[in-house]
Length: 87
Image 1 (cartoon, helix red, strand yellow):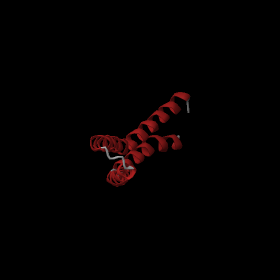
Image 2 (cartoon, rainbow, N blue to C red):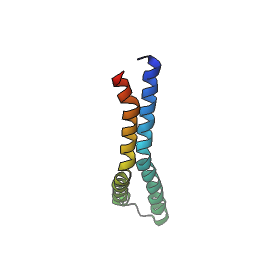
Image 3 (cartoon, rainbow, N blue to C red):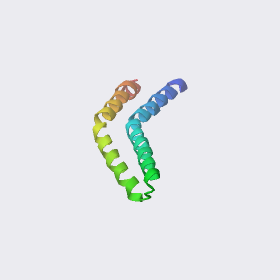
Image 4 (spheres, rainbow, N blue to C red):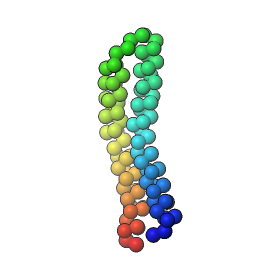
């Protein structure tokens, strides 16, 4: 296995990890911005107001996107790991 093939496999897996984390990161970004805006407008500075909705949203989005994440993992395994093992 050459150095170029190793870097190509690494690039594909890093891109897969980025795609798998994207739904959760976007959810927390949008929800954090909305809650921060709400807190700034109402002057309510309660810590649980930011923590509880974000945790709930992350859990919901995680379970909703679990099939998508599994498909990415299986595609990476079938396209990169199995051919590398079988030679």
